[in-house]
Length: 183
Image (cartoon, rainbow, N blue to C red):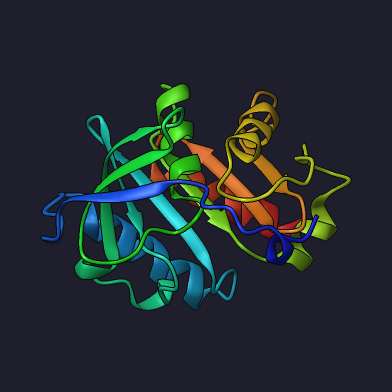
């Protein structure tokens, strides 16, 4: 399925505020991003942490090794039926941000999610980890595929995209990433 041939708007983004987040978890995401880049595990990733009923997530097209406070969005709410994302921050959300929001809200034990966008790593792990069927990113069908694959594992392959890890905290997710990268 080619994403370039389909011109749909997967969701609308509304800004509750253009001010940057003041979440106490900002340093944790900054540290995780630097660690992923410095260890040559990832250059393109989406990192999210639960923050009460909200999540903190990096914006699109951000160098994860140099994340700053202004590169983060606080997702206040997401309505998958109306396809409306409500955020705080000044940047654009990544197309996979609603999927991260859904993971955090469907799985109570998940407080940290890291999605490493590396197609070659995904291809190497397809036979070893639960793998999603290919779906158009940003759609509800894509999110359902991700949630379905996460039923049996805390690390999954997103077909033709990358590898996604979940855990109760960032340390657990980092350990899963390092373990998987070492295999």
